[in-house]
Length: 285
Ligand code: HEM
Image (cartoon, rainbow, N blue to C red):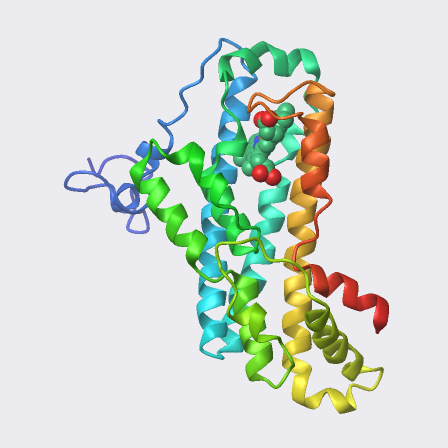
């Protein structure tokens, strides 16, 4: 074995008992054998892989926002900020994954669309957990997952847990902002609805910074938190809009494989603001 010229003292180790440590950690063999295309169309491979890649990013984002929410509950703003910051880089990578799918013509998409049957990203459980963490809770979104006990149980748990924004409101209240008890004690399984008191809290936090930042000393970290959340909200909005435009290009106004009105339904979803009062408060600063 040692006659091969490439094998000097600096050469990486080639000799392993069983599978490589890389494989044991990354499970690349599992990951790269999960691409079971349904049509003969060569373009379906990238559609499937881009979707799988996005699922992996959804998984990372759920992890980050969980970490951030937990840290906020413990008033540990630096840990929450680090997780939110990482998540903005991850969102950028997620959004870049649209590139290979953004220019599908209807003809290209049609060549494997029928193979998808009723399959739709709408049925993505990890995306639903992500939306739940952003505050868009809905018990009816659990229904498609009745046939998968583990997925259902995870989603049901997430439905009843505080969202990232619920944790933010708790922190604002502990920091002396007037957040109504009805919001802090709300039924967590329901969609968060914007509230004027929360808008006023963000308005105060953002106004305090002024141009000099002098009077902001007490709330400067909350302002930075508000900006990190705004960045997350903007990037999620970009994902939704990139999805909308890719869909419009690939299938026009046809109904979706998941049974919705397609683009019209996605337009409504994309119009919703993530962390709504962080956007409306800006009009009053
Ligand atoms: C360009 C190809 C794509 C088209 C034409 C398309 C089309 C659609 C349509 C029409 C819907 C509405 C539900 C339905 O009736 O099916 C939908 C929902 C959805 N799609 Fe896609 N999609 C595409 C790519 C992707 C990819 C790559 C992902 C990544 C996972 C994805 C994730 C989702 C999610 C998460 C929803 C639900 C959104 C929500 O609940 O607000 N889609 N898609």
